[in-house]
Length: 391
Image (cartoon, rainbow, N blue to C red; front, side, top):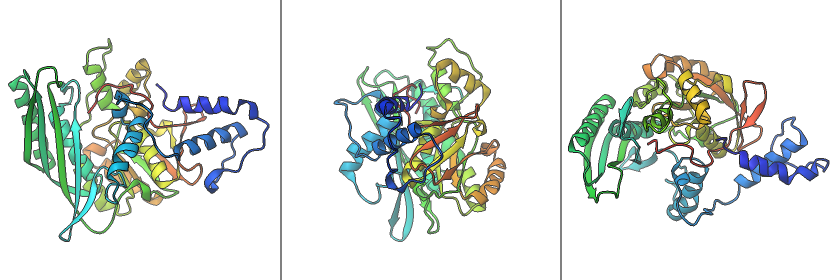
């Protein structure tokens, strides 16, 4: 599925009869690129659409609302942010930054409903721990303590629960965190999918610096810590519904060690995100929207394993939208990019780190991809729900 194709097609149809009309003045004082009149009209329409107040048009929740793309963002902004709005929530980062009795803390929460529960490279247990550790780490915090809440379905094998719990403890030990409190609920058979896990995490923020995608500036470099899409493709194939075999495993891992090394060596880091639901494409769009700047990335620079690319092509899925669970997206000043990549490659989880693009002043709010064929296309947020539950 190609995200954003519906918007672009609608825009082209809307302006089909206006090819010779005078180009309207670009909104918001946008710096324009030398694009055709039709392209500019399309970009202007997308810009107007994105700046409208978000509104949930559906009467009932659909799976798309949990896919991490456009429907998820609209649900969050139109329902949850609208109801709970406050300065701590409004940045919509992976963790909230709090001040408590003179200390700066980071707080995050997440829920895990992956199917299947066990997959090559991990299971729902270590996924829950690593995901929570990573949400704290990308905020610049040192993760310390986690909670664990279990929703168990009647009939779930105790042996499977023990495997999940053991993997959680192993992951917590590897990340240097402790699971300090929790809760357990059991629902009737058929009311859940075996086991769901909810977590919360707390960590300590040092210094006065703040990280966030809104701090991106023109000229900044965008880096990924390694090949993308491993986790999402692993989950899809592990479901056994497709007659496809590929030697790929989940990349689930705690990123706090890699991030600590990066922050120690590159103090000018602007922002970090772990590319989970919605993949790297969603992170890039969040950067463009929050900073009100453009993002330009190069397709050939984005690391993708051959197995993941092949499976994605067979399934008709763009790896840019496929979830990762152990990959970091970093925004750094352009003159710090080489050092950041060097430091990241010195860590096992960043051995294949690469600069994939840059933040630009042109076309604010738009992510553009230089394709391998020499053209350029818009990378919009994920539309629809092309993947199974991946986290």
